[in-house]
Length: 146
Image (tube, rainbow, N blue to C red; front, top):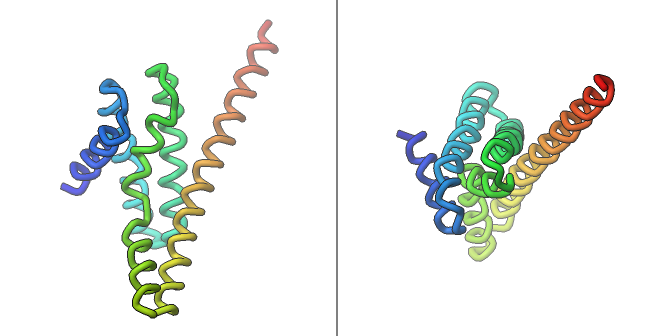
């Protein structure tokens, strides 16, 4: 049931940001794959940073592969894939506790938001590095085979 909801959240966000209709299904699949990686890691290792890092890495790698196959920009699949990983609840609790004057609790939530966002961003950076290395190896192999 959770996978179905995540899939539809990716599609729903794709509709909100006006994705082309031929990209909606793949955007939902990208969101589901990233969330499955996140869910598997959070339930085995228990690390919030590692789960979000590998979720972001999955989004980055899958979106590049799908973008190449569909001949579309990878950002179309990145954004909806992020929806299940975004720390919206923690961000809400941060603002709520700041407004209520619970500064210690608010800073705890804020550190969690920063940790999650940084982990996702680092996952994207590593995915981009992997893609650049793959392209360089492919180019070097072509040159060697000539």
